[in-house]
Image (cartoon, rainbow, N blue to C red; front, side, top):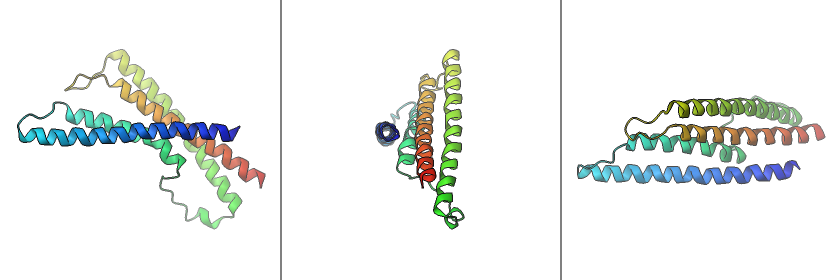
Length: 162
């Protein structure tokens, strides 16, 4: 069962990563177009805001994929000295703590996005609602929490099964 959940989470992380890639491409196209149009004295209004929003999408939506592929930086020179089983236990505990943290962060982002929506918060130049991007950050953090929870369960199953 954990294998099926792991596959589903990995597929969701892959989809989120494609959204992150599209956000980076959008940032690049928007910035380049704005620079070219500035040469003709016709900059794109709100470019700075849109690049900021797309940057938030990129950062949040790439978290899960990076974690699935173990792409985050880890400093484990001390842990490498421990026996294999203890290393696995430390990895599992670390995954659990991080899963709880990012689950809490996702919940707080949901609350904050709801407040932004209720108050009608918009960006300064484009008057674009801000809350959808905060919901996106919450989704990225929730997916990362799921990835880490699956890693915790898998690590504990392997660690305790030895």
